[in-house]
Image 1: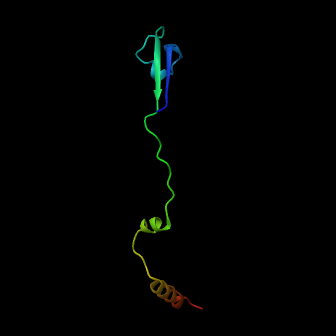
Image 2: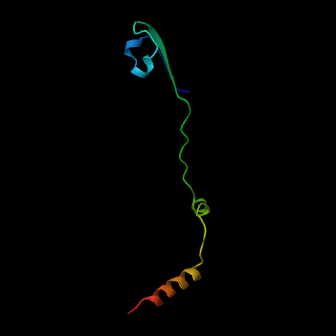
Image 3: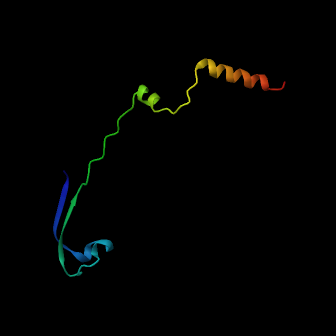
Length: 76
């Protein structure tokens, strides 16, 4: 785990939101640590991508019929 410790830091050098409630003449110890590691990005396979699709799914024949009906409705 990554961790940084800075001792004897003047409160006056801290950002405003960290100074609240502290005397500006005091010295403090600052500890910075990483809360959690970022998850690595995983590349999805085609099967995983297809599994994430939302229904309804149409077959090739259903798509062909739909296109043909739309063509039949066109006025020439």
